[in-house]
Image 1: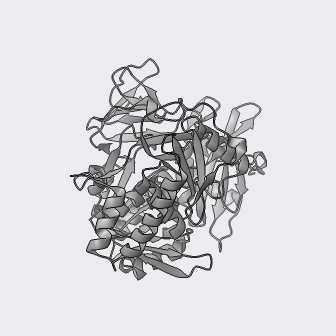
Image 2: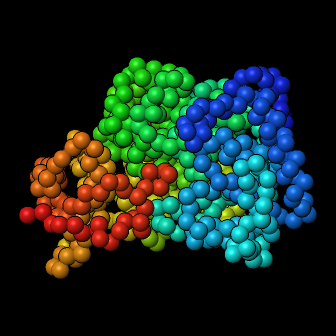
Image 3: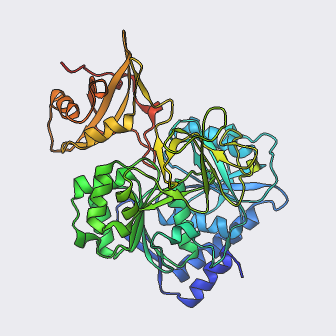
Length: 490
């Protein structure tokens, strides 16, 4: 039997009224908690306000400014309980980008409302007035995607959302050490797909959720210890900085049943560092897309046997196709297509250009990779990321991994720098450990011991931080042109 979100929250509150549902922090980082009874009361009041304010005869959605706060979490819960489509928005989104996102929502909904801190809906900015909406299917929530390209897109989860004990969370998440009623830490922001979806699952599965309002490596370690956290989802950027800046020991994470990492590619040293820290059976990686076209999953011991893989399809068929649409042989690179038992419905997407599909239901978001003979997937850089040095192709991930192997380097990105005769050479932007100092020539020599000559960076720029999305993916369009070169090494 399935239950509505509102009924599920009400039932949990009746069964365990004083059990902690949410732990959050205010602007002064003072801890506040909500019991299941308190959460149910807040959600019930907000559901009433939403239903009173919104016209039931028109298609409406609400936008929640989704920082990792108790207010945002209860606002999301209230919208799901009221069965009003909800879109979690980055509170720091610039006005121009906010207008674009609201206009995209306006393609589907006649009324777009912003939910305030008291969970009251108010009309969106009139500059984002909707056009005639299209698409009539019901929606549970909407998520922004396109963070790597800078072109905003929005995908929609069909709704209304229901609690089904056999399907909450999904079967793939259940493979990652998840348990009903666990203590869970949300590190990434709720406006990003992975933290949002695991929060929704946690809400329905009676978990105690700790919301970390901003990422700080040492604070993450402290929160895991303080609340005996059993499960968390991280990005490779989180993982790298925790290892390098917090230096946790096994005892710090003794309560953890598992860590799941998603999104950007994880360098081998970071992956091995976490496997050494937790053991291979407690480290999981999931590859997928906000658009929901399929997933792969790999556990730490599988990765050790096949370094670099993102795993095999989980309830997903994976094919690698060439530019003509033909399937390629194992070990050959091409575009990754996936198909799940539930075929991708283009009407579930607000932006028509999110996915490309084949007639038999395989879909791609443009990622490139190759399959081995056992069906394990390895991702390659996309065509627009590959650096062409005089006709030689350079994988930027390989250059970045070499730099990250240096003890002074916390983060790095490699990109093409124009060159008069070669067309391009490799340039890098590098973030150093706060206490470190290193010469560019020393970094070049370090790379030279690991890379072929044409792959060695010729231009270095030191920066305080790289522009990464909430998923840890580098936002190349935010890299300032003045940083793309930097002084060449001698």
